[in-house]
Image (cartoon, rainbow, N blue to C red; front, side):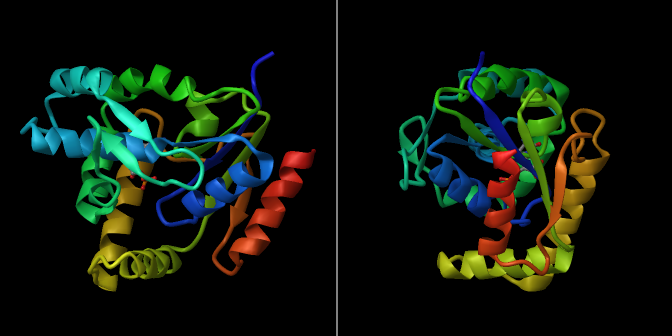
Length: 219
Ligand code: C5P
């Protein structure tokens, strides 16, 4: 009997990160930010001048990547022991991430690494294919979504709050391009698992969403 998993999938900016962290905290479970793995890989590829179409080199890199996440409230992310939390949150890193994430070999190379996060007493896994592929046997599956405009607005506020410069029009265009790439790709496209509960967060507060999520985890 393996530790329980709550999967939270959905497009970028739907609130997965915030909701997943809160849910993990309330449940006392571990948290996996799978998007960060793709972002770290994208960043590392740029730094090592590996082109996004060199699948073999990217697979090797995905297997070799040395990654560490801060524990609990510490949201730091380390690449080869270098703190890159801010660096991986840029729109450029997000775009790179979604390009390397479209390669089947890269996704396969990151599979075991993700599954190793499943430890007692449980795991909240945040991403695009947590419920459909990586943890398809999860007990609880949620698909969080919101309109593209609302997501661009949220991303904008998030970036400004972190002191990162941004333009709302650019963010909306990036979000739409990334949605398109994530949902149209051949392998593990963005879609709700058949047994996922879909929550549209466009008009909901964080508190309202987290209440719904906790209700789903009770059943
Ligand atoms: O969630 P986040 O915006 O950090 O993800 C960055 C990119 O990584 C996504 O646009 C997507 O292409 C990719 N990704 C993925 N599968 C996941 C998580 C993220 O393909 N489980």
